[in-house]
Image 1 (cartoon, rainbow, N blue to C red):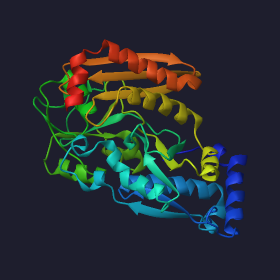
Image 2: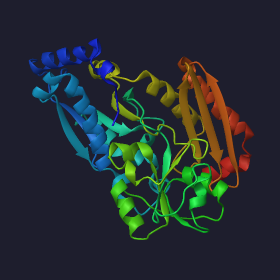
Image 3: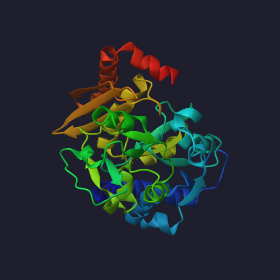
Length: 352
């Protein structure tokens, strides 16, 4: 599992975190100053807990004083997105349902910061909250997991491993649209829940295949369950996929400064571009939109996609430029995609 590399965490910035922790441990608690432990909020799913604990373990591994002082306290928070598994997120409020209760706790002061899968965060955070840091990106690609694992897979034609009319367990319109664009014969059923729940349903015959992000499977140590890895040109990832983000109160200048010291600059640049694109297109869980940025030889390259849910329309465009202009590039590419997309596609999205 990789969130941040050792040189970054062993830097002077981390020593600053340790020094601040020592100062807080001896501080007299006042209404304006918080003492240790710092309370971290997270979803209670296995993947969310692994991500949060890995983040905190990395911090304490390179700065043992934080571990010895018990600097962090984990708060597991149940979200509506985790509780309601029988409806699409679009039908019950969108991807923000994976963060709503967590952010309510953050705004109320019951926790000090929160760790999220960035792709589950709404593009516009609630007033008073900010994205304080983004951590090193894991592999952003999507994968196919098959019920029948004996079939031949051709990496160049990955969807050929699915039989005619195969039933795909899926909750993502982005994935569904891209698969239907290549294989209009495929059928889809709703499959939600944590990784293990989906795998259990797949093995029980609820569907012929399902799709999961490679990043999550790696973090859970379940990469061996992958049957097909889809390259970005075969399945454009979701904006923020594979990146962990940390939110805090905008007014908490001390904590924002501490967290900024461990931010991964590349993850910040690519996520800024992807989230700007998504925000400009008003992306939600009912919107077949993909956004994937990467930095190659110092140049940020962003690919964006808009599609119809049935896959009959699919448009991809790309833009490149300096990483410092990530936000502008995301907005500019979104404008281009909107201009070249038939108006009825966005009308359908709005009505959905």
